[in-house]
Length: 270
Image 1: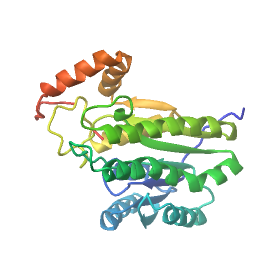
Image 2: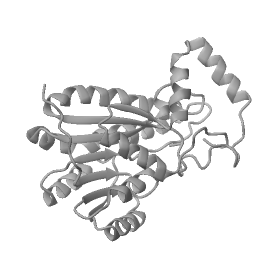
Image 3: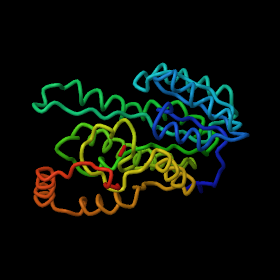
Image 4: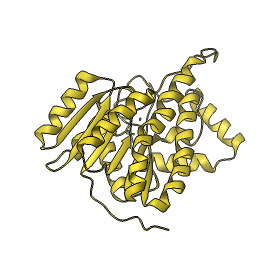
């Protein structure tokens, strides 16, 4: 088996980069000698992030595209690769969370979530894999979620999409390991983003986007395979994963019935 060698990241591709964790990651990596390819649907917000990164000395290429459009995403990825010698790090961050309808009749909702969160990750990684295999180095990282570990009453489709990501990236990691390519799956807890702004319950360990990005950067630097953060989420969801099904069902339904409202005192989503 090929030994994965430590490497520095000079050429980095990030999706969902216009806000939240994606914007924070772009700003974190921006520095002299670094070339960023940042992609998002929001062209105006993406330009603001690009300007911030350029102020830090990075060379930045921006791409307004949707990760569900495999052909367009491939075109953007190939354009970015034409500007650099090689891409060292690819971060699949783009994702959505939509509440399902109570009667589960709107099948377009889970289909849309799966298309963005799961297929969007595959579309993001795919254009870069052949070159990484040829040079036998590179790092692929996906921003997943604690929702991947167990289902909750309000997030079935979202949890399913993240669970699919976790299993697929595990398989990808095994397939690419002989080529010296590292694959990291980063399961993030609650983060202060648009995704959680409408959630009206206590979110233990909730992080700012900047703190979440710092934790992600550390996990990537350490070449972690699967990591859950913050620690509050890791402890709680490790406990949940250990519970037998009937006990987990009772506990979650009991907690939902006694849901603690979100407040300024709740410390504690992506």
